[in-house]
Length: 345
Image 1 (tube, rainbow, N blue to C red):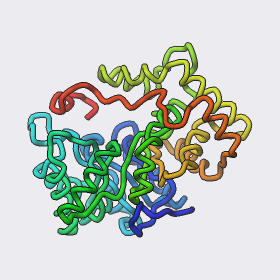
Image 2 (image 1 turned 90 degrees about the vertical axis):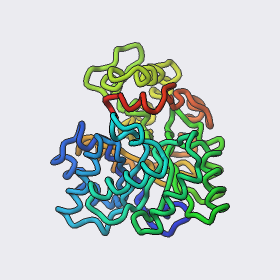
Image 3 (image 1 turned 90 degrees about the horizontal axis):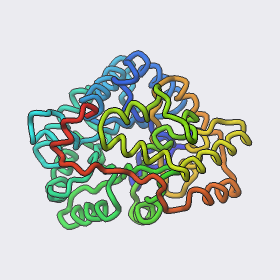
């Protein structure tokens, strides 16, 4: 496996990062252990989770696994802070010092480890001064509880603002950004990727398969199948329903049909073409995969053997224009505390 530097650091991570949002929800602990076993056997050493995933259950499963298998030292563990962790406490979310410090202690306990390798801000928070946030993260690094810090779904200007604050006050700086990036949303190619390349920021895309749109389960003009992620998430909350509906537009199906055509030509699966495209793009360090089953993990691992030609990229660019978004990331127009009432958090 071709390991890569995590941004401007010297730490080496696998070209695929194992995302664990399904752990404790659609994936039980026994299956999660099997996925982790096979991922590690294949050479994956980078695991991404978040405290908000099943209110800490995903972290607990990873902690149980590392304790049982004795595998902590060979893994790079990333988790996140921001989303609400207590519906009744207005201070139990966000990126202020109080929540960051408490959330880190809680994540360390659930992960059963002394140090988090990469601690990420799950989302930006405009009303909290970035210097308060970065100083709290810097304190965690200086006390040895965190090794590196990063962001998730931050626009380029917010990442640069954090770098300026770090330089101004002599604080540790962020080394990673985790944005949405796939064949239906290429907006990070405009500013975020060039900025990251200039400043040594690792890019770890989430949703490289457009939330499973390229799985082959969705068809033009047909209803969403009941056993799919789109159906389940569309029924959870209003804004998710709107985001899911945005995927089912004619231009998105144009992209899907080209991906399916490329898959047939190469005798692989459409979802593998979508993943191979993400892996092949300049500035991408390690896309995040989120297998729910062993079979899905096998599909993702097979991507490492797939290559796309220059002609393939030209064909893709005709239906998915560089720097453009057919289905842009959709942020709900709601306050943070209202978001804490959603059952998916």
